Length: 311
Length: 292
Image (tube, rainbow over all chains, first blue to last red; front, side, top):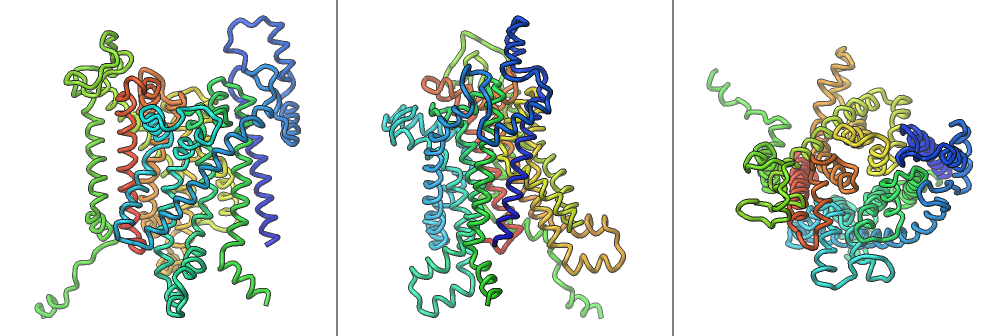
């Protein structure tokens, strides 16, 4: 167990280092500099700008300084928003995105697993068909279109929920649904197919013939085994919610990190682009790392192996 | 003698692919999906010529008209015919989706097959490298790429395929690792068949089912990614329009002219749905174990 965690952790650190390095050099590969687009800046001002952003230093020095900064969570100043530090923007935007993301995550897991389980238990009945039709529609409608439709119908036409902005719980409902829809559909399909497989296993028959209650079988035997694929899907799930937030936050005008990322791309604010990329990669890699360890703890087969090894 | 021969004549063998095709045809959802895809493909080819307009020609007095006999899907903010534009968009979106998938398949199969075939240290190194690339969210990489290179069709394809092949490579590697241990591969090796022969004649054909299935799911992913990029303003440049750029333009006018968003959005969803239906059917047909 310990060796496994250490191995995964080393991979995490190496991956993160590569992402930082790659992003840094990719951004510095772009021809010209952040100030070439605004025409006719006097030489002195340009030089002052260069000096302010340390752009006159040789690339390796800049790289080394950037790396040192990232270590302590300092991503440097923003190119476009004068006097603002990138880290402050992240500190401001992330809690908003995080709230929305967690809401979507729980929504996707709760609805997805429930629907998938019901579909598997009622296989070939109408509950199954309905869930599966809903699920295939769910994976076919991109989040940015769903977000617009929800906004149009529930906020503009029916006037049930706020159109945009951020503040109360009501504001989070539509964006969270838009973000969660596609992952929910994926989870429902995943849960269903893996549960259908588990239901056919001999140990379920054994459990039934032992006279265990249905609830106990469902809880101890079926779900425990059937949900393992869902655990492995958690990594891609978080990635999907992260990237989905770019457009969903833009559509609903939510002041989160996703919106900032889109803004930084349109503004070509390289410092902010770099920082958010690194930050998101870190979050995702860390979640995948945690999921790997969670999987290790949850998988009954791995535990069995450990027990027989110990005895 | 002849009679006996006739009697013992074995029933005609049904190959893996024929068997899968027979099963596929019974699946109504797949048939519907295939028809929809056929129709979309057909309209992408002939659609732009059905009306006497072009996708770039503007008629300012006729802007933002609702769908009518003259303009089947209405007109946009510059008075361009939406019907013609939607089918031009179909060409762009389908071209991007299919080409990106093709490139993904070529790179993914070669990379995955090499890793799986050589195994050991080579496999470890190749898959670690792929894992690191894979650990960054796909759309994040695509967006970063589009920031660095100038926008255009080639750039989009480059961005989409830069990490898009990894899912295919991982799948193929797993298949090859499994298949190369099977008896027929060992037998071929014992008979002195060369590595390339075993790989191309024995292993890859047997991995074809999952490859085709993964491929079918890659197309909607690529179409989605392109629409996503265009939606953020990083896609193809005007006056060319993909479904994504049209949806993005339509969003701005949603309150007053909802059809401008509706048509491109509808076709994006329909295409993704059709590919997903066919992909589901293919997976079930190639892997009867999971069949419902």
